[in-house]
Amino acid sequence: MTTEMERARRLVAEADRIVVLTGAGISAESGVPTFRGAGGLWKSHRPEELATPEAFARDPQTVWEWYAWRRGLIADCDPNHGHLALARLALGGTPTTIVTQNVDGLHTRAAPEAARGADPSPALPVEVHGAIDRDKCSSCGARTPGTSSVDTSSHGALPRCSTCNGMLRPDVVWFGETLEPEILSRAFQVAQDADLCLVVGTSALVQPAALVPLVTLQNGGALIEVNIERTPLSGEARVSLLGPSGELLPELLDVGAAT
Ligand code: BV8
Ligand code: ZN
Image (cartoon, rainbow, N blue to C red; front, side):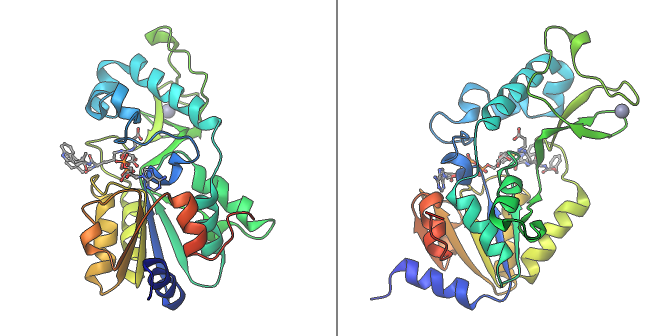
């Protein structure tokens, strides 16, 4: 009797081009809280409260406090076996592009770790919602490395751009903001070219990122979902693997979790 995992492994083995869409769930086993799960990031703060340009305009100190706290939390987290298994897939034979909604930078850190001295670039992700560890100037758009020690003691103490003195912000896409057009079109292009989409650890609620798997499906591709629960995409999946991605991805992608 063919198990779901065997069916999924065969789909991966037979795929010509793979696109991966990951969400906060892939980083849960690294210790990064998800957004909507129990004890999720947003339990303490609602997204409308803080991850919006309006919130930043109204109360930049509180928004910076939340991001500085998240930066500090993420700094203590490492890529897990799920990130590494995907990086090894992307560094292997089948052309694979990792598209992530996550801003935690863990896929970016997994790439060189998996490449072990080889060129890590095939495993570097398309970060459709930006990166929390980067700052962006609200005025001139200059991007610089961010720190988790942000002085939020007063409005005047908030970080400023060294070029134009504009207000710095975390280089992430907030609700109500459009994604960088060239990044979004690249994500849709690889989804269109793929004949297999692996959807890992996302509630598939946030648009337009959640359209990526549908683009692959519309072009006749197949979907494999890896999640600890069913989502709105589960019904569209050729195979739905229920369980933690840190355990299932090494098995699915044939890379031992131990390595
Ligand atoms: C846009 C960066 C055009 C910030 C993020 C009203 C006004 C304005 C816009 C809208 C509106 N109504 C709807 C919209 C569109 C809105 C949207 O989609 N809203 C949703 C909530 C309905 N989208 C936007 O605003 C986007 N821009 O549309 O621009 C526009 C402009 C104006 C007006 C209209 C349209 C911008 C969206 C980007 C938001 N920024 N992040 C920050 O992080 O601070 S999104 C944020 O959610 C994170 O990036 C996160 O990745 C993402 C998606 O969440 P998930 O990754 O899926 O995480 P979640 O916690 O939900 O789920 C975790 C999953 O993992 C669960 O399924 C769980 O079961 C699973 N899991 C848990 N553990 C494991 C696991 N799976 C496997 N293994 C485990 N161990
Ligand atoms: Zn500037």
